[in-house]
Image 1: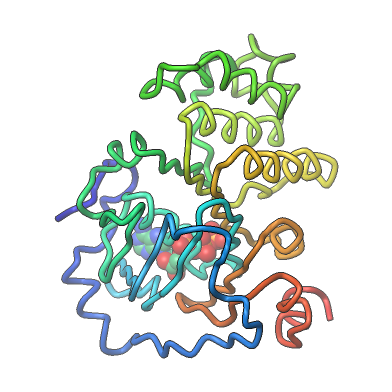
Image 2 (image 1 turned 180 degrees about the vertical axis):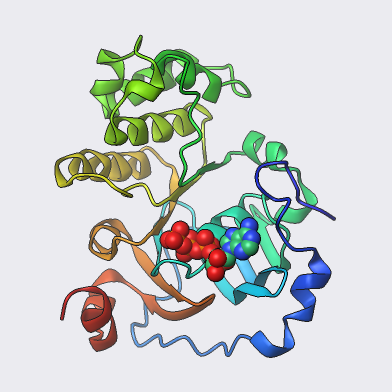
Length: 276
Ligand SMILES: Nc1ncnc2c1ncn2[C@@H]1O[C@H](COP(=O)(O)OP(=O)(O)OP(=O)(O)O)[C@@H](O)[C@H]1O
C-alpha cells in the first residue's frame, strides 16, 4: 500500500524500487553495541523498525535499519548530510514508501494514512518547518490543533510556557519571525497536535547557540510532559546532551548505537564527530 500523503513523496520510490536495492544493500546487522544499553528499559516500544529500507530510484537512502524507541525516551538519530535522517523521519511518519516493517504502537505505518498517524499522535516536525508565513503565530498554533480540539487552551498554555517568545509575538506573522523563533513555532505547532511521539528533524539547523539553549530546555520539558521524542540531528553534541540513546546513521546504515556516555567514549565518534 502506498503511504503517499502528498507531502514531497512524488519522488519517493515504489516498494519495488526498494526491493530491487535489497541485494546490494543488505543490512549486516552488526551495529557495534559495546554498551549493553541498547535495549530500552524505560517502557514498551512505541516505535519499532525491522529491515527498514527506502530507495529513491537508484539511490538507496536507508539500507535495512532495525531500531526501537521506548515510550518516554528521547532517541537521537545522528549522522552527516545525506546519511538518511530525514528519510527515516519521512518513512516513520508515513510520508515515503518503504520496504521492511515500521510499527507505531504495534500497527504497521504503511497501513495508515499520514493524517491518520497524526490523529494517533505521531507528529513529524520537518526540517523545513512548513509554517504558514502570512498567518500569525497564534493562527499557526491553532492550525496544529485542527484534529484535536479538546484541551486546546491547555496545550497553548503549555507551548507558551515552553517558549514565552511565542506568546509575546502571538500576533506577528510567522514569516517575520527569526529562524530560532520559527523553529520554536514549528515545535509549538507540533505540540498543539497533542503528540505521543514527536519526530524532530534537525531542530537546531542554522540556529545561534543562545537559541539552542531554549530549544534544548524545550525538548527535555516535552519529554517530561510524557511525549516520546525522536531527534534527527546533525549537531552531535546537542543530540548527545539530550538523548537517552543514540543511533549513528551513515550512508543509510546504523554504524553505532548506545547511550551518549558510551558513544562519547567511542574513538571513531570522538574523532569523526566530537572534534577528537
Ligand atoms: N526525494 C528524493 N529524491 C531523490 N533522492 C533523495 C530524495 N530525498 C533524499 N534523497 C537522497 O537520499 C539520501 C538521504 O537523504 P536525507 O535527506 O534523508 O539525508 P539527511 O541525513 O537528512 O541529510 P541532511 O542532514 O543533509 O538533511 C541522500 O543521498 C539524498 O540525496
